[in-house]
Length: 283
Image (tube, rainbow, N blue to C red):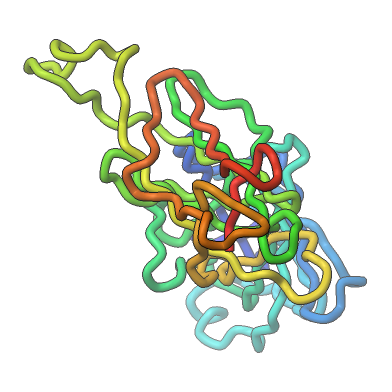
């Protein structure tokens, strides 16, 4: 696929994947780019009918008058690095940024970091992560937490929370600047007797085991305004706490793998007992 408008060749195109809707997103986003270290030269992308976000021009590049054919891409202009900022006017997705090289032929082929699983995402797509305020579609489950940095006594901004639900890996969320995170996902297959899996346990009585893990490294200085891909996905493993005591370290209890379950039709809000109310401690 080549990105062209009339006789113009686009400098860069990206496609953003919403795992909740299992679809590319072509509306509501604000996708901006600027040369690394020069945010004053910011330009914005527009979405095309294929739900790709296209930059027809980028500061410092002159590709729009190229033919965009094999000969052009055989000797393209020298690439430059750009910061891409992604915000959602509809509040569905956590704001983030990434750095890419342009020009690029066709949609940018973004690759997740080694060891990071993003199930069912089309190759080359850039993932979107739901905000804690997003409306949960009917028939889907949600795990919520307010992640709290115990060492800093502050929200664990941009921490990553990953859930294994009924043994299925890869349900992943990114906390916002206030540490709030929501993991939204389809319920696993029902468990129970009978050929249809429902004879033994009715759907409304179904429960599945949940195992949580976190990745978190406190950013130096003030928390950034956006999460940064891909680094946010490769933060060092943190520890989640079932029980916390500010004074007695021996009384603290780590969150055990066998502790949590999610029931059909009910949100799972995970909190630490003791310490600050209504938060999940992470260290």
